[in-house]
Length: 296
Image (cartoon, rainbow, N blue to C red; front, side, top):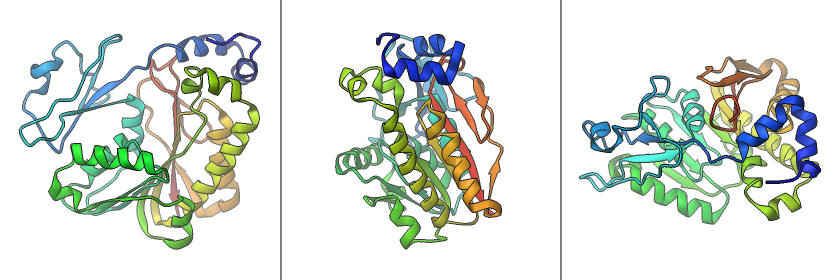
């Protein structure tokens, strides 16, 4: 908890007005998560196996909502792959919004820890390839482990783990990908509220620096995606400066070369100028923002 006089609290009070106290209260609660079934290692009647008390909601197929206060661990199936992946429900929606098709060449520009990558790998089906990129060596090792734990060896032949600065894809691989997910490095305010040191270091200037980096990555994604291809830009930030304002800048600079695709509005989602945001005071999970961008 932080005081109402803390610069962080005062800043977002200005952004959200009367909504802020309720949003703040929701942010400091434990995260709502789902167990997403691993479709690459199917198990008959998984719900009967261990999820019978976890009601499945039809708006998020293949996922089981974990009741507050309960903890779940994946188990190995007969093929030695793990059966479920624990993640934020909005992250599932973001990965599915990219609409990956069999045969696509896909880039997950900032992929670790890998939950969204798994969703997209499943969507590739029998054809296509995905590049799961992360600049951090430590996060990249975690990403490799997730892929090994969830993806059959026969499919792993079409999954590449790379360690580039995302900006390099725009410079060196223009017009190369059918689909690009940019889950951009962001402030992650929920996690700031869990970390005293991060609270002490926080300032509005940090958001400004991150927004600049986010735009550089989004501009690179625009260069790297093929004409007619799709980009999904997402963050787990509650700051409009890291969300709509980054997308708005791309629209302003690229003009008719890009267009927004109306994002699906799942339960609890709220439309913004350029996308959709899930906030925990309304949706019960998140925060997570995403925008769907097509290169014309």
